[in-house]
Image (cartoon, rainbow, N blue to C red):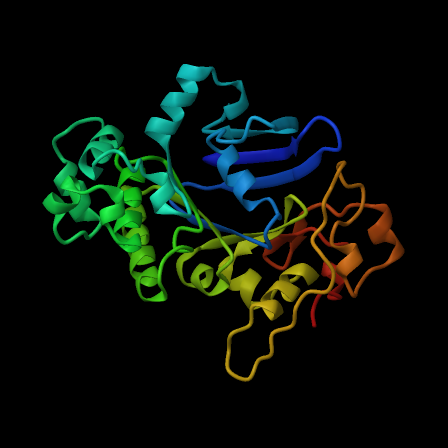
Amino acid sequence: MSALIEARDLTIAYGARDAAYALDGAELTVERDETLALVGESGSGKTTLGMAMGRLLPRAARQEAGDLSVEGRSVFALNDAELRALRRDKLGFVFQNPMTALDPTMRVGRQVALALGRRDGVSDLLARVELDDPERVMRSFPHQLSGGMAQRVVIGMAIARRPLVVVADEPTASLDASVRERVMATLGRLRAETRASLVLLSHDLRMVARHAQRVAVMYGGRPVETGPVATVLGDPAHPYTRALLRAGAETPGTRREPIAGSPPVLNRPATFCAFAPRCALRRPVCDETRPQLRPVGGRLVACHFAQEGLATP
């Protein structure tokens, strides 16, 4: 069975002159009924790739190369009506800040009814996302809800029509630590009930380890290591993945090690390894040839030396 979503050499740039490349030859698949996490530093391309799935990109963004398809159809070839149908029926989006995702001038019940496509069933949907008093929530405006309650409303709206894929961009970033796990548990339960795929964009590697099945590590606008969570986060093969784990280490007795240097700002497609300037394994070939994703130990890795074990600490 073919992948539900597939990005093939996808290149997205912002601006006509002095362009900044947010995606640079991204290769990725989203399989049916799975949770795939995209991780990486700010600017790595996570959000651009996630939003490209519904063509929810700023006007300044342009597709320069490659393609992204949902169920075999290019999202860039859809007309306005087809694009609206895709967003309405097949994709659901959960954004970082629920207070900006909801209309502040409209009562919650009306917003949920619009997402659901009917007035009946709103209370039941709010109950499914574990809101204790759905009737009160329906009568409320967004500012009258807590952050956790508002995010549950947004999750309910995202799964209202039983989409094929839910894209969640840092869905717990604006929430207190005490409610993050509950919100993620709700999102995971609903994903399992609806058999939707979940694309989780996150900086939180511990949350990814608990809730995702597969992970794609993004750097320089493209995945550089993809595979099962236990394999990639438990025994990373790419030097950037290893550095990212050390930078976010939270286990007792483990010291965090910041990654030297800065993430790349590409004004043209890279012809070299984008991580080379920050990599201790840098060799002349890294500055001359960009490594492509290839199978290494049960995952795909874009590193010239991963197969030789040089990416192992």
